[in-house]
Image (cartoon, rainbow, N blue to C red):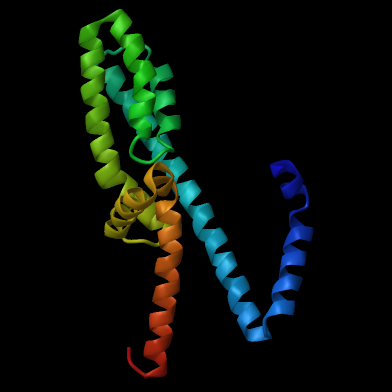
Amino acid sequence: ISCYLMSSKHRIIHGMKRIIYALFDQKTAYKVIFTIKECNHIFGQYIIGKALDSLIIGIICFVLMCILHLQYALLISIIVGITNMIPYFGPFIGAIPGLIILLIISPKQALIFLILIFLLQQFDGNILGPKILGDSTGLPSFWVLFSILLFGGLFGFVGMIIAVPVFAVFYRLISEYICGMLRRKKLS
């Protein structure tokens, strides 16, 4: 289905624009299309930001594992980096195969790796992730954390995945509305 959608993207966009212009007056239709473009931009930036965050975490994991002389550093770091695309729980999910591998080799290495992943996750979840995702989506770091906690509490695991881009869209729409209201009142 994704391949068909991608190959027909321009026709689908053209058809959707026709429908929007048919249903709404020109000014409202323009606002709807502009909002959809903004949503597309925010979601795209979120995916790029999350990929960058995951790459950085994978590299940090590899470097730290090499410094600590843990075996299979490259393999385990790639797994941790890829699963880091899943907010909050990703590094832990990625740590399970690495933990099993290292547990077979040496329980001491497995314990060191477990502590490393815990510290890495704290760094990513509280410092690196909010900074990168905030910069890529336009949300301040506080709102990134807030959105993940709110959506995670309301919608569980799926909420945590979609929290940042959805909240960024709401944040941008509310900000534009407030700025418009202030301009009408001639306030800065």
